Amino acid sequence: MTHDDRKAHWENIYQTRSDREVSWFQPTPALSMELIRQSGLAPDEGIIDVGGGASLLVDNLLQAGYDSITVLDIAAAALEVAKNRLGEQADRVDWLEADATDFELPHKVHLWHDRAVYHFLIQADDRHAYLANLKRTLLPGGHLILAAFAPEGPKQCSGLDIVQYDDRKLMAELGHAFELLQSRQEFHTTPSGAEQAFNYFLLRYTPAL
Image (tube, rainbow, N blue to C red; front, side):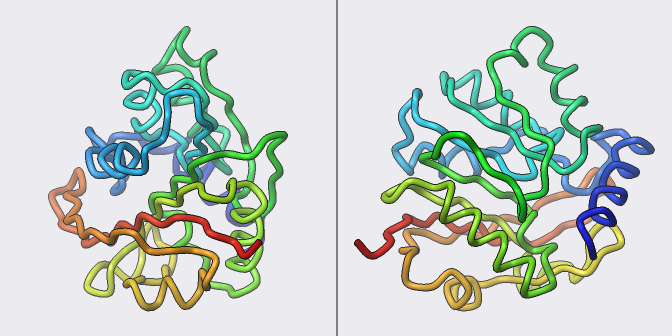
């Protein structure tokens, strides 16, 4: 799937469906917030939520006192949902309409959060581009939180094929520059009542000097 195809797909999703009807909607991103706290991220240290779009994670981060937040999404419509929801607080956030495989920040971040973007990258070239961006954007010693469908989870989402990940498969792709600190499983209940098995990974970026 090309960049233009991806963008068209996700713009259509958020233009035709409520953000609270999509299968990945979480009223409370509890596990993400728990892992962010465990990473030791300070309130003034930079965090990027990749594919954050309409997610409520940014609301929770602001409420918890974090004040250096970038939310990236390929769909402008998704970002508008979050901006409208936050009102004046939206000015406290940097919003970036871009593809996770092709963007550049003016600054590096201490934490990269991705819930359910990486598993959509079924082409090796897209995964390589994503990982190159990750390594360019994340500070050495910084943390990666990545959530993807587990092997016992769905094989598709939003009509698209995905790649399922467990510890071994993810680490084979990330390589030695990342240290796995923790993996957790979450059974996400969709708005329609279905259960989806996610694996969450907390990793430290430790590139060779």
